[in-house]
Length: 278
Image (cartoon, rainbow, N blue to C red; front, side, top):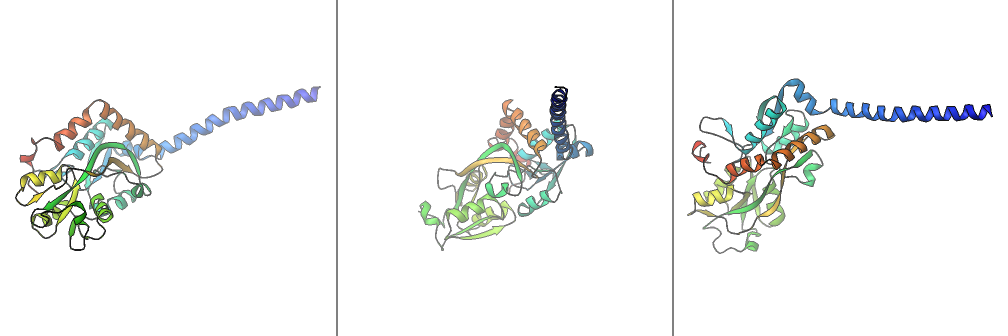
């Protein structure tokens, strides 16, 4: 009887030890993940480093050479709420993901569309903006074109290297020739100059060009292609950053701040006189 009681006591003690050990282990693991997060690095350094690529109206330079745009508002507001300074790191689009992975900045906030291919390399927050792509076509070169006419070896598109429009053009119009450039402005200028038939871009940029240069270019189809969400991109394996970014985006969306800033840059004209034409 005494042996049985002793065994029962040992079993109970072991169970009690496990009951206390498991939560402690889980808490330690959680603390380790949190301490390894880029959020802790940002707090310790006192600086949020944001990678972005220049393209209107997400991010651009005003007449004084200062960075302005929707992404700049988002980044500055995020840094303010974190209680840190902000540093923007302009980076060529085709190298922006490798630069993030190598640690040159903490997060990409640059209108980056969430795609499965990119998600293999980086993690994404919930979307903070949504946009679709439209075609910007040269009037003379594409007169009378139906959508299927763009998929021809006789048609040339231009696009920014590494950007979503380049991928979509290649998928939608595999027979067409595709010329790649480092900046959106260069791709658009090729259409304006009549060197290529068309390009694709995220609204409102194509429609703005069509209004400014209506005698030369137009948006030929009243539809957006590949409508998708844009998210913050950050290094994989960081649940603390994912939690923080998602909660921040949720709060700014529910309060209307995100929509107000988006409407200012994408639907309004108040800022345009302070930015050089591209």
